[in-house]
Image (cartoon, rainbow, N blue to C red; front, side, top):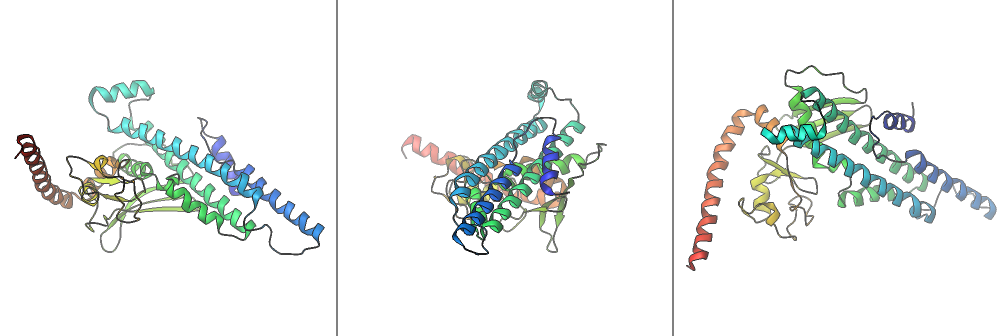
Length: 325
């Protein structure tokens, strides 16, 4: 079965109407561009093997704006639903039951697991669709504009595989799967998520979607070069330990990452303005604390000392400022 048909069947099979790519419409734009170019060549007596010029006003004026709009809608929907689901799972006390009642969900893990899996599948199949349509664009135009557009999408934070909520959902899926709960079979598109370790003992989150996409998220902090502790994802998608991120942003843990200067850059990609919208990865934190308890306990004691020192220094400074010393 061709991917276009498989994608349409998947989107039409969703209980709730979700935003997606107009895959068929985008392919028609490219097909029209190719046929128009061949017609013009035939009139001019040209026999160029190229199917469409590198910078095509027809495609560039309709294809990319349409794709950008649809990608933005998909990412916004995914982030909103994932955040809502994880808030429901991590809530406690009265707030948990209030959210449960408001969302009209059953109070059981089965519902949460299924919705989490559905959201991961939704993210990955749309990532495949985006990759395939951009590859088609480059094939038609004999260009690299599709790859360039993908890079621009990443800089605008509308690349769905870049979303911190995808990492959180993968960890969430593993956390609930490992609890003693029987749940329905996975979607035929969804191969499941796993926490794996390389030969050096460094962990990563992996997830596969049928024959096209394998997501591999490294969980090693590039600052301290150890497994991320109290992990946080910057808006560029890179993951660090919370204290390491605070150090890179030149802020204390008391002030937090929101106090970072706009010019502060990600230590990896050097992108600015990435700290204010940082997301604490609570599900990932739970997963890693369960998977490597000895490391977690040792790191917890080390960080406790450093946190106490920073808090003491902060309040000493505030007291001196207040007294005018």
